[in-house]
Length: 111
Image (cartoon, rainbow, N blue to C red):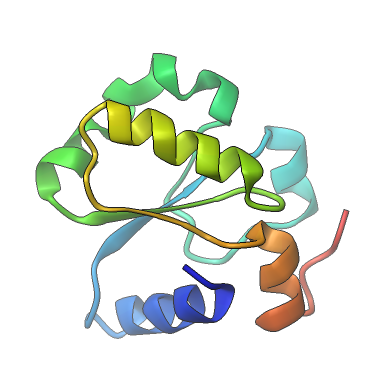
């Protein structure tokens, strides 16, 4: 999913016209620098396997899960973990928050 597609979906969700979960798999210190507005939960990718119980309701809801990180690599890895755990509707944000900053919200700090 491109950052622009994510922005459209976030806008629709604000209007009650879309429903999904937005998962940040960066580390807490990165979240202090910047975050995408509308993020539902932070679980660092290194902790994801051990914290799947926190998002089991997401899987049971049948809603899509959109995952992002700084540049797209960790979120791709997280999508693999989630897929192996039975999550079917997954999207990785291409280029992560860096490309989101370039294409959507230039106020987000780059690091």
